[in-house]
Image 1 (tube, rainbow, N blue to C red):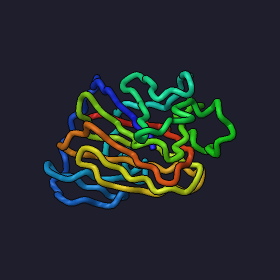
Image 2 (image 1 turned 60 degrees about the vertical axis):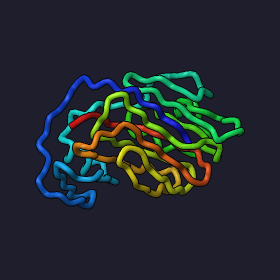
Image 3 (image 1 turned 180 degrees about the horizontal axis):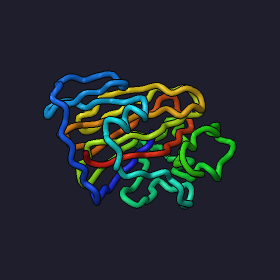
Length: 201
């Protein structure tokens, strides 16, 4: 498992009036209310329709030094934390530089993606935002079929991945600002992240 720490700086705030329907809906037809719980998405088209576009986007194109437990991006940092007493191996790296890790389909935008070898040595993936956001979504790919538990600020969800098959996961938290998201990957596969959309609605 991995820890991603996001220091997020809002540059474009998009104001939207939420729906008055106070119920959680399937990914294909989400609804929101001023006091709704987090709404989860497994389909990017539905997520984009619900957010209305205009979110910030990160496709992990930059070349960064491999083997580091922390990487820095424009609006956030990504860091991996390890289990107590366990040394992390194969830490955060640029996927395009590693052709034999079972993630040939993981790059969903551009030519790069962020990857690491979970190998059951990491604790979790933390997205820690310095300023709360209300929407986040990205593509996740694993080298083996896995179950990924997602937690954090008002978030309790899980999803499964097939072998080397990108799976979109997204969340809208309405007025409940997201300050942290955690991803806990089962089975110790290689894991890749790409095409992250995030911001405040």
